[in-house]
Length: 280
Image 1 (cartoon, rainbow, N blue to C red):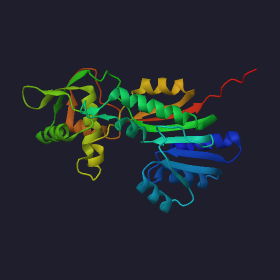
Image 2: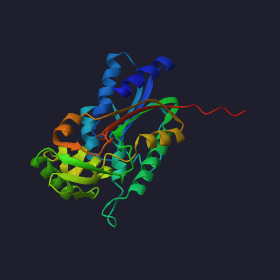
Image 3: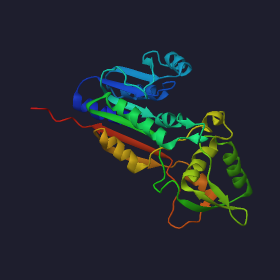
Image 4: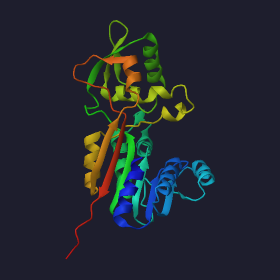
């Protein structure tokens, strides 16, 4: 786990117990696992804090992990009064900040407002990292092509096409932009809409669909992540994009447009906060 490896490196450098924060911790499973790994490796943790605004999730977290300090707070809209920490984790949470910017007027998420909200949250959270400390961020990532770029796709089966049509009718975070082409099994679709199809369809038959239909995992592409974190004084030590379900999608649909690959679904970033130069 990236957060554990960051803690390992920082512990070796600091030679003292660490402070760790997870923002948007939910039921605390990620934070609990990191602490378990630290204990197994003999890494001392002085303070461990999980922050979330959902009361039900925090109630469960406190029951499951009584040794962790959980705080009810909105980490995205205002700065938190917490001591600077060695490791600040944001695992699958910033997309919720983005998705909360739904506009009834637009009938979908306001993209500009959502990105602004994410940048604001990152700005607040960067203040919680001590000089030399690390940020661990895991979330969705946009395709490198411009969102309005159009591609041609072909479905392998009628069932796969029906699945797409269901997504188009039920997905609420965005209206999917596409045109059905002659032949019945091909579409012209924007890369923005195609990326949502790739990342959301698998939730249809799970209890999570009522939540997932209203959210978008993606908000920044790789370049935008780099730019935003750089502006906050965070030097990127690791950046890795990953698509765990690629084989599943290759069996359902092919991209006929030359030179275009499937979207990467997830991005993992570990950034180090660069110490500000001392004033003379």
